[in-house]
Length: 515
Image (cartoon, rainbow, N blue to C red; front, side, top):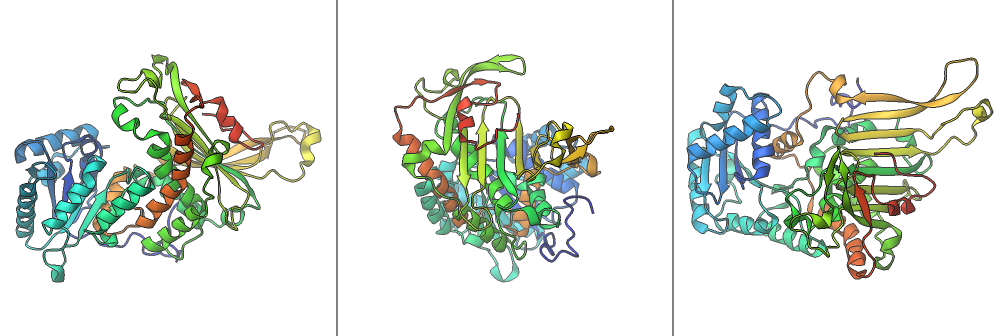
């Protein structure tokens, strides 16, 4: 079995992981004419249809404020799929997916719009000859989440129309889920007033990436790694999410978010949780999420008065990326000239439990860095006695396990090996596994896996309410510490570099991996 393959027949931990059925479903996308729907959601639905993964009856409705006809929506959806699908669309499959697609126009707080939506869904049920499951996908700005959810509840669209014969109702909510702990608590309360927790699917697309899921397979399907996955053998962990792009035209969003909220609070802490959690008794959704919450709750929250000792923030200045001169953050359109919003952050976190006590976890993310890269680097402790040193073994390094999430998904393990020749000299070499060359099939997009799981009702790769609150509990003290410090200048780093020099001060007896 290749590295990362899930043997669902012989491994009791993961038995049954892929066996939930997919019932006939109506997918309703709020914000259906927006960027996320066009680039990700509609192409994901097409690729699921192409692979035969969708149920026998699949219906699609778009909801947005634009006043367009059903035919115009179908044409717009077709163009988006033809532009952004990971494979050239098959005309017959595309026609089958879109032939009965409907568009419901209106503002998200308009009661009449929800009455029309209810009529559209009733028509879907009549056409299928059965009550369909319903997936409400909230692909809108966060301020509309409570508005839409409240109206769905007021119009009775949050419950099955025929409970005795099926027709489950689920809601998928995009990030960001909250702006801080207080807003996340309020949003959870608003959503849970309308939907049961079992109906709520808070999506983080990172959890749908193959390499992120392969992290669980790496740990729990290979006896090679689990014995060393603890403080006795691991020296430190680095998690990097570097981007070479700037903020583009997203100043309105980014000024209110910053790197800590945009990537660390969700994507990066999710990676940390999967890396560090205890083995669940099975991959049933709540058992897996229980273990994630446990390890996140074990992260020592920083004292706001000592945030500077475990965090660094910075902004990119002017520089050169891929041979092109680019402006600094303060020169971007829409950014306040005195903005203190961070485009880079690095953290040192510690997990206060038996497995990880004393092991530092270093996280860094930033815009306009040297290249695009998301990876996890687990560095083992050095061997206690290197007998080969007298033979001129230069460059000997501790073993590392590197999981690359993007751009080239894969896993590599560094080993010490003898250099050919008459002398006993050692140097590091890599054993590598790449998705692109190890499997004949192309990896699906993250949204394909997550949309299909939402149809199944499998919440394993979605975020539970207490997990959201625990994540914000880690981030809130850092935000509070930064907000209290209005005098210290925000460091800058040159666009196209590896980030600010101040980030090096967080590391203990090591250095950041090269970008």
